[in-house]
Amino acid sequence: MKVEFSKQAYSATALQKAAYEVAADLSVSIADEGSNYIVTAQPVHAGKPDVDLTAFLRTANDYALREKLAVQTEPLRNLVLAHAYSKTPFVQE
Image (cartoon, rainbow, N blue to C red; front, side, top):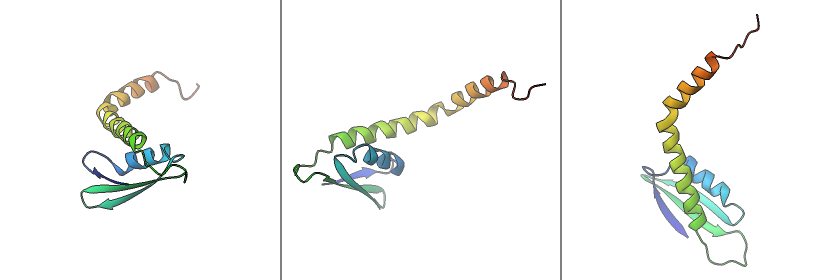
């Protein structure tokens, strides 16, 4: 089964992480085709002829959202870390 993913919505990293998550059930290949990624999936087990991409789609959405949230919260995360480290004595006197 082949599915197209827009590069605007999904990064290659998010799709690769999703492929890793479902590797026990699906063999996934990702091809770069212009403005889209083409994902081809096949079942790992010969006894399951149908390819159910639900888990892959759910996981890809999860990783894409995580990436977007990481970008949006990076300044706040850096501020919290800077404040925490400013209170930590790294060198003992």
